[in-house]
Picture 1 (cartoon, rainbow, N blue to C red):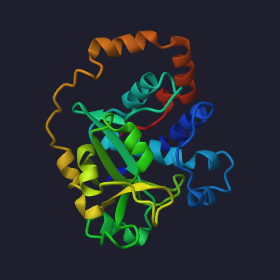
Picture 2 (cartoon, rainbow, N blue to C red; picture 1 turned 180 degrees about the horizontal axis):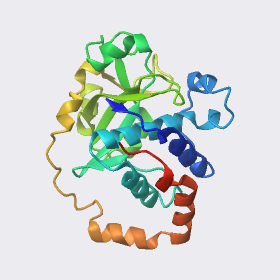
Picture 3 (cartoon, one colour; picture 1 turned 135 degrees about the horizontal axis):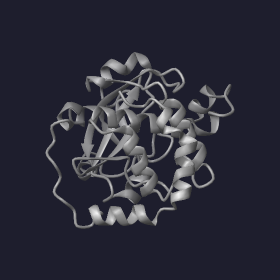
Length: 244
């Protein structure tokens, strides 16, 4: 469990506002939009805010500096011009963090991974199109939940479990359209690996297709320094508390 840093919500909302002119969240949740209906600033961004809070907390849980993770994300997305391919890198593994909206009375069963896969909320979902289009860019999908669905009120983040990308189609050969808002790879919660095992995973072998130190330096040099400075000023990272 990670206690959500004090300013994680505000930083996440600012990131969503900064990217709004370039792209939006791929899936809109009517349930979450209704939850945020009293907050005009949050309503159009709630899915993305929850996602960024999950990224920040996952980084903390994995021992990654969340501020460095955000700066790296800004560089890799050409300053929020497009989506990132993965949320963070951990020991050279590319990790995509998923935060799912699960009713509180089911949290224990989901976190213990004992919930019946055929029961409501018994499966963890990967958007079918998103998974297929991004295959090869993510190594690990880490599922998680917040203690409450409203990101303004959430105080704790919990890892549920993870699955290697190469195992997804073995567990669920094709996206399932029935019962879900969009076709999704439906992974029984019991098929996930214990999240604690991720903390001790060995480093992934270097991939020649991934940018090395020199390539990353090139990306940094190609970034518009003035625009990067403007974004960092808008985020006000130096005065925000997102570390623990």
